[in-house]
Image (cartoon, rainbow, N blue to C red; front, side):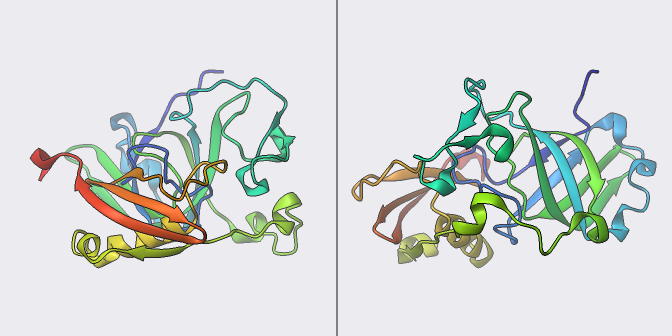
Amino acid sequence: MEIKPVAVFRSPFKAKFGIPKQSGMVEELEGMVVLLPEYGNPDFIRGIEGFDYLWLVWQFSANKHALTSAVVRPPLLGGNEKAGTFATRSPYRPNPIGLSSVRLVSVNISETKKRIILNVRGADLADGTPVFDIKPYIPYTDSHSKARAGFTDNHPIHRLKVEILPDVSRCLPESDLTILRKVLELDPRPHYHHDAARIYGMPFGRYDIKFRVEGDVCFVVGCDLINRDAL
């Protein structure tokens, strides 16, 4: 069986660094599912506006490392404890396929250009990610409120306090600042990094966000245009 993309994802994250590790963790994060021209016929999405959420099946295209072990080190476990590949959502898999639930916000159809765009929120995909399939989320089958969740039940998400310098606050619109705060609260650093003096750069939209982490506080110290010609 040969699997080909049906769409490409557009996101403010041009690289995987900083992207939430699960869908829905930053509900305000906007993105677009752009269907490829051969799927520009509106019949492909007939009735899709009746669903609040969609499943995206996609490729871990930003991950260049092949699977080398049956176990991985989930960041939620601190990077030291191991778990089986199939007992995690690690991108290191025999088949690098991801699954994400996103909220459908609106549908944009241009029949003259044979272009269909699904505007969504809450995705955890990098810009340019190939999307293999789109399926509706159905609550009565897809939601299991009392289900156990393995090691995640005993390891709650730790969130940082985010402090943004005034100069940076003036650099971004309020809506982007809200998203940036929630992204940085999740601490995008590699789990083994603890150097309080280290400055990290995170591409976010048209900007390169500079930040450092000291204890439980993330300080956003810079905001530079990645490409001034794009303005």
